[in-house]
Length: 107
Image 1 (cartoon, rainbow, N blue to C red):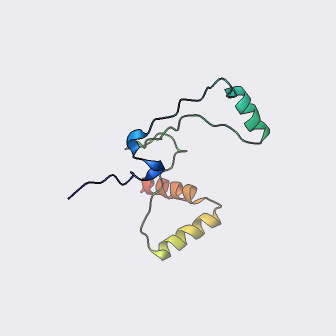
Image 2: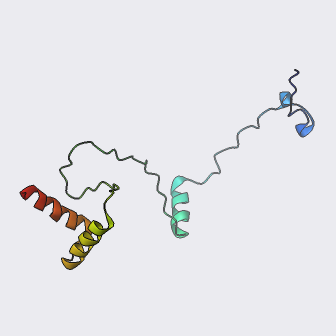
Image 3: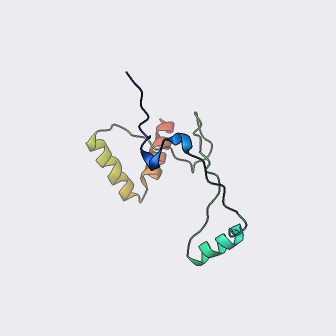
């Protein structure tokens, strides 16, 4: 088996004659403030903040505001009862579940 250079015919020769271009001068490049102004004038917002990943902690969470999405397998009849309970009492699903959990604590 012979290995051949598949790029040999590109640009009139092999990649052996390839030389990188000299870097262009950065002197005539606009400053960051100028770029921000142009972007703002055009209706864009520069968001260069680093993306931070939220890590979920195991165990109980002290804050009531934090919610963990999950899937439950429940009977349709039970869900319909729970849903109508929430509608009757003007609860969201989260509020209804919190009420149900507090009732379970009293048992």
